[in-house]
Image 1 (cartoon, rainbow, N blue to C red):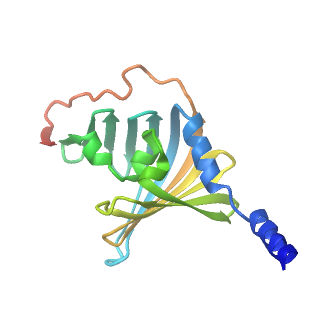
Image 2: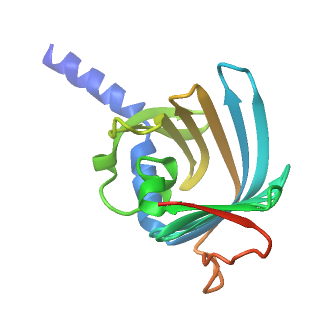
Length: 202
């Protein structure tokens, strides 16, 4: 029985994925990142769907830019203290405290430092579609998100799937990933837009 148990443990470890290790390795090795992304959103209750494209930029710790280009222009920018949402279609800027905005969110995984296990339960769910997957379950009961899946191909993040409490699933695919590119010094500095209405929520 002892040898049989050892055999099954070896077999199990042979098929175990590397998702958690890939995630931690990715976060520890990245200071700056740029990537093209495609985003799809599906509301499971209404059946409504949407597709978006753009560029993602990260500067760890604490800074990011999501520059949406299709089907309309929109920017979400975090400078370390404040998150700004610039909606070009509506000529509107909304801003909120970054600490408040990112608490328990997928964005916090990518830009914040510290022990990931304090904020999420990290689960290895193995290999699928040629990629290593990890599941993250928020420990904060007030989080709007119920489940986050992240997939790695080699050492690069390739997929992210987010489920929330409102029955919505958001999927990201990342392409043309560049690690530690050189960006301008004020790349993550918010620049005001003339003629835009501004709304703050702190």
